[in-house]
Length: 192
Image (spheres, rainbow, N blue to C red):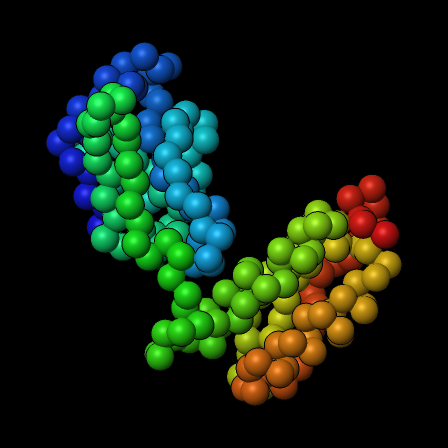
């Protein structure tokens, strides 16, 4: 799954010797599956390990990856590259920006999640909000949930009907309706 070269493993081992006992490595992807995907490596302290993490064992250390992004790390490689300026760790993840909308046999839910993440959430993030797909039921009803600044926002009805639902119904003919299951509570977090 993730190929870590021997040189990179030695480098990780030497880096981890300088960190608090129990510190490991984490691989993360910001905006996975979108053209804006960014991969990175960071230290992972023991209290930062989550139940949704997958633990990958290497020589003398572990790499933690959230199970929700593991498919985007297919055929990934971590290497230590040396050049005239010194050495640098590189992470190549060829599927991190993979557009699942172009996959022939992609599930409808995957396509909708990608659409929300790449088309709707960048707009909502300007107001500190986001939306996620909960499920698409057998009657073609897409159940969504708003978060952050969208939760409790007085404009959420308009956002739902004019921004989210209108575009989803046009792009995905299998969807008959979009329902918001957010327990909207207006507060300081709400945008309006």
